[in-house]
Every structure is written in structure tokens, then in C-alpha cells.
Length: 336
Image 1 (cartoon, rainbow, N blue to C red):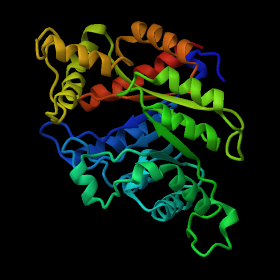
Image 2 (image 1 turned 45 degrees about the vertical axis):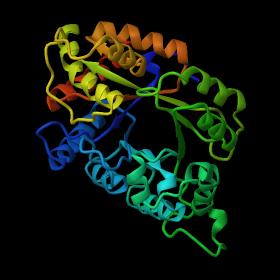
Image 3 (image 1 turned 180 degrees about the vertical axis):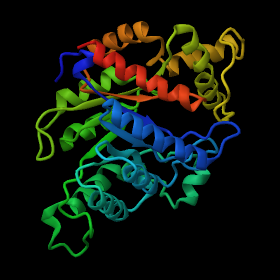
């Protein structure tokens, strides 16, 4: 476990493959490639993409294909899923897909797994998702582990390629259920505090206190995902953050929209109840210039003692998003 200093903590990125207002999926994919290439230069450890469906503002529905595209454009950065919503898929299919990815890009692929549908109930039905799928998640994870293990070479059903490739599996979560599962299986754990902050500390404590060492992992390992909107000044960061706030406000109100252009941060675009709900949802969001961010992120690491920080940055302007990630990399080096 690290000593909670930013320079000693791995930093990684969660790219939601956001389609901005007036943009296209093609533009999004080009920007994702460019972002991953820059992150590789700046020393980021991994780059994850998340499975979502039927969302006009998110283009990563075919997550495995997009992972391959990003991995082919980079050299050392770990690329993976944050996550694949396993109940939407047969475990064998995911074993084969990620076995193929790990064969094409050895020692660079992560397989993060979640139990949510990543969509609405109608789309979940169109995905042929069973209504009991979430309850079967633990068993499906173990079935997937079996397909990826060397011990299955005499099995009647085998994942070719995939078998014996030792692909790192992560359990993703936004509640305590996932913490118990990750601990019992001895797997690394990633918590979605960028949109579900309420149970972060409880989930981490449950995971660490109940962790059982396994052939995959000897000690607990925790990633916390947070939102970071960085700029050269606090004022500019607040301006950029208006796009992010409107995006999350749309989730709260049920009026989902594509990522909008930033506006003057003094502009009033929500009522007090909406603002209270938003602040609760984005409790682990860090907005500001270098000095402000350094102080706040150090405090977060001290409080949580997480092993790795994963950063999501919903910023409308691509160059501004690049600069946000670059500032974080600079802060990390400055704390040496």
C-alpha cells in the first residue's frame, strides 16, 4: 500500500468516449486515440473504456473493438475495460474476445467487469439480458476465470485464444456488494466514485478487511475513479467544468444530453435542489488549477489510501482535455 503521496501513486485514465454536442463518433474515436498516445508519453499507467448502450453521448458500446483500436495505436500503455458489463454477455464470448486482445497485445490488456446493464431496461432486454443476470454475476465471473485458466485445457468448453493467458481481471463496483465479491475472489477492485461516491470509504474498508490472497493477487489493490477538470487557472477550470456539470445534471433529471460547450460559470443553469443533488453525485470531483488540485488530490489519497487513481475528464474542447491530463501528470512529477 502506498504512503498516499501523488508521486508514488499510479495515475490512469477512464475515457467514456463522449460524443460532444455537434460532434460524431468518428471524431470521438480519433480524439480517444490522440488522448491515449499523449497519456502514454506523460507516464499514465492504463487507459480504460466503459460499455454503455443506447446513449447518444457515449460511443463505446462495442468496447472490445475500441480497445483493440486504441491498443494498436499505442505501445506500452495498458488498455482495458472499465468495464465490460458481464451479465450482458456469455462468459465464453468475453473470454474469447479478451483472449484475442491479449494475444494481439501481450501483457497490456485489462479485463474490468461490472454487473450493471450499462443502459436502460428496454435496451437491456434487446441485449437478451436475463432479468436475473445481476444475481448470477459472481458465478459468471468464476466461469470466465475458468475459461481463461490453464487448468481448463481438458474442459469440454474452451476459450481459444484466451486459455492460460493470465489476463488480469478486475471487479468494478459502485456499492458494497462488489467489494465483498472482489475480496472473496482475491481480485483487484476499482470503485466508481466519479459518479457514485457515497459508499467509497465503506466499500474500500470491506474489501481490505475481507480480502483473501489468491493466485492472482497477494494483497488488496484498490483503484478509485474520480473526475478531474484541470486548467492553468482556477477560473478557467471552473468554466470548463460547466460542460461536465450539465452532463451529470442531465443524468439526475433524466434529460440526458450530449456534452455541451462550456459557459460562464456564473450562469445559473440549475435550481437549488438540482445543485444539491449534483454536488452529492460529484463529491469526488476536483476542479481547479495546479496548486488547488495538488492539495485536494493529496488529501484524497491520504484519506482513502488507494493504490491507484483513475481519472475521468468530461471536457468539451479536446485540446483543453489534453491539457487537463497533462497538468495532472505535471503535478505528479512536481510532488517528487
